[in-house]
Image (cartoon, rainbow, N blue to C red; front, side, top):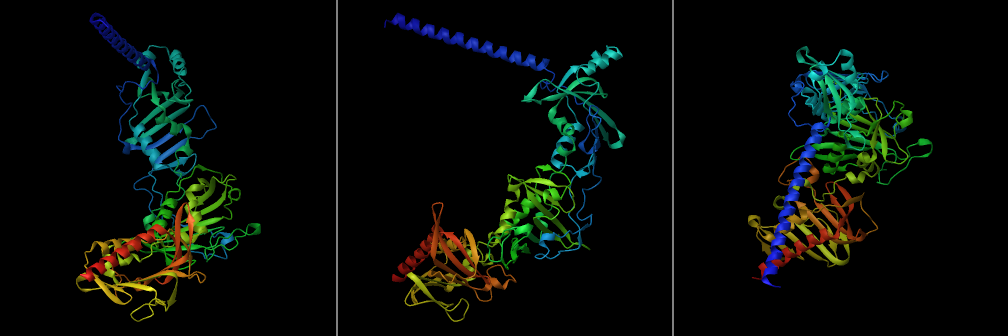
Length: 600
């Protein structure tokens, strides 16, 4: 290509780029001008943000809201009143406990009368029904009504004033304000009152048929304006959209005892039972839980069907679910229709003893919808029937049917401490391994230097405390070496031991049919329960861990079966094989390190 042609081609390309840039610039300016013009012309275009509020009051000054619905004479007024002073205090009402007929043979009456916890609603619905209002919804609503800012001015006060009286009413009628769909009356502290009339929806929609705003009129500032739908919709929808749909709120931190009874709940051995014919409960077994302490951490125990330490985290999660139980809708008052005349389930939560009467929360659980998506529920202090998403109660249902899910999955007592603290709590660790089965002799805590163990030449390794925090390693009774307290291999072992926990507890008591392939015994310091002294004597007992010759495959994960004697009871459960192998690896590193140190 000749140089002249190349230069001409570059000049053409530059001309096209310049022209294209100018076209895009003018197109952008045109779109901006069109949008601004449409926003200015639109009755609900969002405004420019320059319009002043109709009035400006502090949110705390709004005392009551009353809404009339002139277009629907059959519709009762909505009335909302701010609760005077502090929110309702705990235990103001006295409730008589209503026993569940179908559970009369398996549960005891926990109390005759009691006080449910107060509902901490700041606003109360007093018409057309009596119920606490939703605090979250009311916070936003009150903020908007204390300082309502219009989005756009459609007709000015001058335009309305220039018309004759009849013409002005006709003009207001064009926007649905001659006979508004709602008249909102507000009363503030000091007796000040304001009024807001709500007319038709604006033609602009947010999506679908949902309006973006409404035409409004207020005597405080004559003219026709638009106000965002988000401000007014809660009042137009009525009481059901404003009521507090929490079924029975309470403070989970105050719970000290829980009883769960549900049709099909667990029997004492953990097997599931089902309702008998004619609505009988079959072998219903109540699950009773009790809080032991709060310091240094919250600890719970299962009292029934068996007295065993509980998984405190799971119980706290269960309590949080119940305390925040939210309904999808409110149903009618026919208890029989929803299975609440003779409930299918009951949950009693003791909160405190109270000065004269106990403070507690009681939930009654009825039937579910045919598709299984919802369960009908009511609380003790409220005759209202709520329709609750079934998944919100799934944890409660599962724990009633399989109470073993509430048993502690932690293998070593929490009071023994974690990691390095665990080392300070232990007097000895003994581990027997041998291919095939281990023949056990004696029982843990039976006295003597050994707490019982295998016989027949199995490999026995032991860790015993030495001077200055060191640990002596013995193999088949012979000294193999000594590790310093700060040895990395010991740290890994303490971490692996502290991390031992069941994936799932499957039963209580010994399985006489299974053989033992590994046996690990940990004995705490005599007369001491770890770094954190406690009155719980069970923590001073040795813990015996037996790996059984059974296992399973679950979702691609190899599971092993363990039996653990400790804290005064025996648990059977499953653990991921990889977790056990981590412990075996840490133990082997300790042995190798000791042998190396002993050979020098």
